[in-house]
Image 1: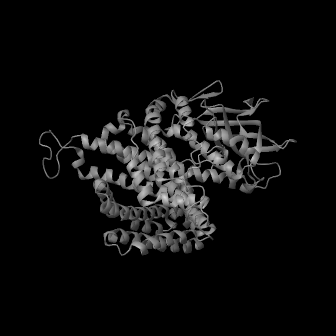
Image 2: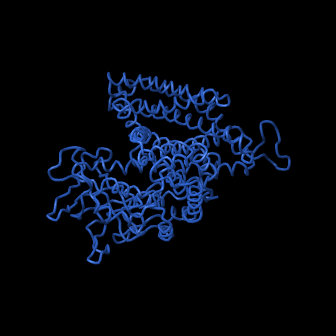
Image 3: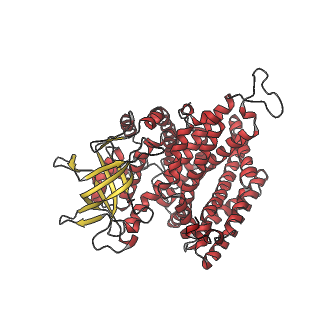
Length: 597
């Protein structure tokens, strides 16, 4: 079985009952008119386009892939028509600046929309999501002239956007890029260099592609402080304003990948292409991180969405597939065997994926709400506090959603056994498509280093303290609620572990800097368990209220509480193992000689 069914009920639960999104929007400038009815209408329309337009071309797009012919890239059959429908619906500019044609919707809606389209068709989703990220960077840092020229057509989908960072010799270490920008007398620049792994670097979906390119000026300082950001269109406007003049940007090759085969991953050559400076010289890396942080959350949602899609397929299969008998004897006397859902280990796998995806969705909405507060709130102190939470949580969200999302796809595939390994049910494609999310937009090892190094050991802004305060405030408000006793106890224990190991790591790193790298991945995983425990406590509170006030959805709320109990009993114990791994130190990693590997 292939296809996609959006988890609308769960999304509405997280938005309305856990996050109270309508009250949040009412408290901020620019979002006060976003009502519950509008929220639900947007989600329902998003589900429709994901299910009816994108999902039907997911498998065929994977099988056909992209192709490069005579220097031009062609996307799979149906992608261009789907893109036109997608753009005409206004989805590319969903959270874009209304002054330039965007819809102005808050980020909490955008993350749920992106989860849907990533789950339905990750290859397709990357094209508009890259455009949305490029638009955000231009909206925040571009001149008024650049905004007027590019944002309306990016939001409308007439043009699309990319980000061009990586070079063959410079992945994470962008300070050593070789792409150069030479000033012209008219204020523009000649851009020369080669970029690799450029998602959507060339395609046939629309009339023009606007590349955001990192390059160095002739007199730039060495290292990352010498990087500038440039807009480099694939085609320049002619006298009539049409993008018909080639701009010396060419696709040298497309990558043949493990997954996301309907997404064109290109080698781009810039041969004295005309570009336009974004913002000030030598601040390009800071500007690009506006887009990168947007994309990191989006890429995390790729793992989350695919895991949720995989769970739904696996749960359906487990209800229908008969194999063996229950440990308690025959359950279905009319059948030669019982559905595999009677087996405890099958339930373990399904509940693990479900507990992760539901906590991940709640965390995505929580992080998005902080992005909205940081951008829209009237109170400067609230904006600053929210920005700190976003800085701390972005690397965790990207890595947690994509790591646990990939693991969830594999676990759901395991539920299907041999059927999960063949094309029919779509699980093998989900596994392949989800794998890249752990790698691009900064590998998850880099996300962990960012968290443990910059956001903890070298932090001067009190980022972790803000999160601790958020959790302690929740505990103080709900700690006396008897129905939440187990949840609060687990949350307290997880918080205590993070506080303890954070202090240990800060001290240990003063003696040996390798302690940061040695601890970073298990530290991020421990932080994930804390955040998921926080999200489950919030969801349990809402579920208990729902049971008290809405008997029509009793089964939904009851399932939520049972999933929370599974998370506490079977997944939270991993926290202590992670603490032990972190405190095991770096010595056992660093003593082996290079030639012994």
